[in-house]
Amino acid sequence: CLAEEGSEITKDCCKALRFGLYDVNILHPDGPTNLERIVDELNDLFAVAEMLVERDVLPKDWYNLGKSGAKKIKVAKFMDYAQNVGSLKD
Image (cartoon, rainbow, N blue to C red; front, side, top):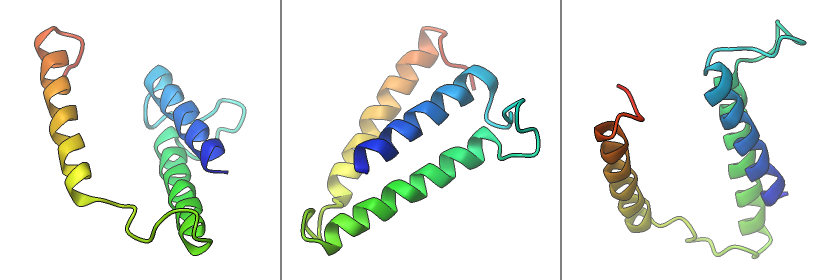
């Protein structure tokens, strides 16, 4: 289930990149936006992670603020680079 949720996040992010965050599926115009879909899938991913903790598959302390902070710094550097080469706009 964890892998499935990850792939669903990937799919919805790709749709958002192609059509925009606030676009809806033309086959379901009353449905959620791509942003709403991403938020739903992120919640599903965290729910599955919680279930894995409850079943002792993941350790209770799996979330690491230090690693999270380091990742944010790394992503920010690459976003700055992307902006400098013109592939990312404000």
